[in-house]
Amino acid sequence: MPSIPNPIVGPLSASEVKRIRAKLNLSQRDMARHLGYPTGQMISHWESGRKPCIGAAAQILRLYDRSDGQAMRWAFIG
Image 1 (cartoon, one colour):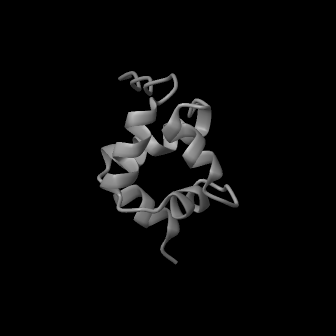
Image 2: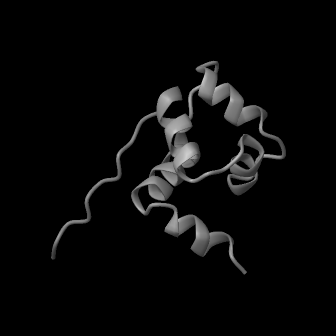
Image 3: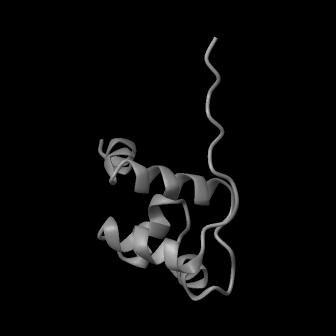
């Protein structure tokens, strides 16, 4: 049975969060809403380096990045 590759773990850097958001053409507020946050403040904290982007949020953003945003469109169109 083939093994399933482990996802990349660990925090995203401030520059990675900014790059992914720009690639997806989202405002901080829109990205926050896609991730379940009520305002863009958390995204601002991540992008400034005040707080690390970790856990599920980091994994979701990596998925969006790898799929060129297609995963985001599948998750939120409906």
